[in-house]
Image (tube, rainbow, N blue to C red; front, side):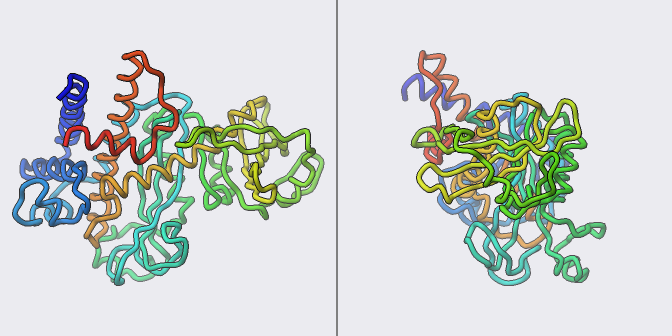
Length: 400
């Protein structure tokens, strides 16, 4: 093993020990601490399928009994570990200009007994499927990203059936919440915890929710939120109109070709235009950002914006592009740490597995960031677009 590989191996061991030491106080019994540490190691291992039997085999257990106990009956608080996850991410990746990215992902399921499952649309399949849906909050900087929060979406059909909820351990005080309401709860927790960030972004599910946008404005949090073409916006001295209608007034000279961020194949180039909207504040302004494909002028996306006056268009474009960070995060978390490979049906089981999987994923992200810094120290330059699945795999596999 080369000295560089030895250094990475030592750092891997140190990062994993840091994680396990950090969450150790959350487990009152020694057995639970040991099993949680083993579960994290199993999630971080190269084993292809992160189900109970294969994880047990990966950590040397003859059966998955210990894993099942950890996710089901052991006494520990997944929300407390979530707080540790958030602190860990901020400590290692925190920056004042970071972007909070909210999005959802689906978990395809068979049967009707898993908490929150029903036939519903999920982008994971691109159609209506029997699935659970989780809403997630990611923390993204220039090149680094990790998840810091998660909530399970419970459809109204579940919340109207208390007996069904009781069977899977949904807390008695749990009320129905829309996906944007879940997003607001997570952003509010980040604010209360003092998480450093400047922007919030999300797709149309969240951008179309006017209540969420108003709440962000009331908390003086700039945002660049995708909206649908038929969302109403209001320009000064004009009545409210659809976003697509307003965009027709954009003149050819207003378009600028800018990058929405670096991808694995280089800059993601689009044409962008800015339209100011009716604003009530002295320091901040509302506006609409329009993104148009370079190769197909009919391929257009719209964004509602709340930002400081005179924010450069290239900054808004890059914030809008940070939405991809969470999509890439879902890909790496599912493929590398088994985010979607759980075999639990209960409320506690879902939150426990998801939280530990996000912690494992954050560990890979921190290791990747550390590897880039090593390259810089050796005289290299920071790698652009290296947030790909291959880059995360390299961090995981370097010491296995």
